[in-house]
Every structure is written in structure tokens, then in C-alpha cells.
Image (cartoon, rainbow, N blue to C red; front, top):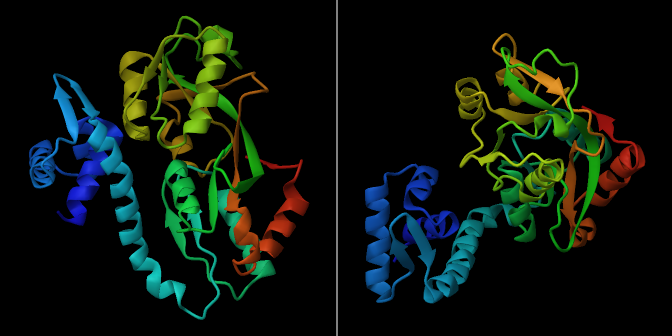
Length: 305
């Protein structure tokens, strides 16, 4: 048994699909399946029930998953051990690549102004992954999409943005100056993977369903280019944030191929900001002072995107 086998096992346990797990690990399905079989042979227990187009954990597999997650987490934290003993004060910042750059810039600037001697090593990962790392004490501050419901944490909205619908420039709705969700009731709407941020995607899904938009297509990825190709080839629509020209989505969903029509739905907005462990305010250098500065600026008055 080795750490790579455990990573392979956890990927399959998360995806419950060998093909998707292989894509996530950047390997082919055959060696992945072989390594899982070798692990099961060593344990002398089945980890998965394999049926045609269906995979699920055995009862032992579910127990093994929790222990394996703890082992991999502790193994990964060994890489940070040397940094943990440095005399240089640090605040470990996590940033989701799809969050608006101006939010990250705001946080970094606040730290530079308030606690200039504190180093700010940055980890890039999805919002969901960063919230897990925050709980595991692998980062101290996460710049993510909100809301975040992680126990033991607080959050602050720094920026908000309106939502629009992406469509092909030739779409019958492309001439509209605005849309409501009810205008989309007979249309197919693409939903990118909820794994990047389950809370945000759950809010969006609920709003669409409540408006009678039921033809939702769940994509197995968050690849913007693939989503754009899907829109052009099938005539489907998808959600995007308006306003921030620095976002990758803004550049991909650009004219002349695409049209983004604003949604007239005040209750449906993108919120981005920071999340931190409450206990970290007393232990992470400069964090309490930076939070006080950011709260003074943005509580009840987030910047527009």
C-alpha cells in the first residue's frame, strides 16, 4: 500500500466513476483500476461494488475512505512542516481561480498596508477545496465564492456582481436587453459541476427550478472552453457573472460568437469574499487587524464587479 494508491482510491470514492476519476488524476482508466484491485487484494476486502455503469462504496469502503482521507491529509501536511517552523510571520492565503481578481487584490493590498512584514504564500484551488483546506488548517484565509457554510468559520462579502445568460449570438433571445428566469422555462440550461462550490450551485439551481426552468443539464466539469463549445453546438444557455473584464469567462464568452444578456433577477447575484477560521484571528499574524480594516470598508457595502 502506498500514498498514490490511497489518492487513486479517494478519487474513485469521490467520483463513483472510474473514467471521471482517471480524468481527474490525469491517468488512464486501466492502471487506475489495476491499482485499486491491488489495494483490495492487499486488504483482502472489496472497496467498491462494481455494476454496469454503476459504482458504489462497500460498507468497508466507506469506513476505509475516512481513514484514508486522514492519512493523505496528514501526509500532505508534512510538506508544510518546514514552513510551520519558520520565524517569518505568515498568513497562508487560498484563492479560487474563478473568483474576481479584484477581490484577491483587495485582500493582498489590505495585508500590505496593515501588516507589511507578513508573508502571504498563496494556494490556488477551487472554492470547495479551499474550504476543506481551511478546516484542515492548511490555509488561514480563503478568497472564494460565497456563501460558505463551513463550521467554525466566518465570512465577509467583499464584492457582488449581477448574473447574465450566455447564448450564441444567433439565439432568438440575443436581441433582448434583459431576461428573467421565467423567460427561460422552455430552454436548456447548462449547469457546471457543483464540486467547485456546492453552495453557490445549489442556490442557482434552486432559483432556476423555482422559476419553472426544469431542463437543466449537469456537466461533469467546470471547463469554460468546453461549456462555450456546448452552447454553440446545442443552442443551450448557461449562467455567467457580469462586469469583471479580467475574468476568464468574460474573455471566452465574448462577441461576436456569443451574447451575454443580463438577468433582471435582484435576488440572484454572485458574491465573492473571504472566509477564515474564528480561532485563527488570535494566532495568525496580522489577520485580526486586516479583518478589521476589510470589515470597516465592506460590511453592508461590497464593491461592484
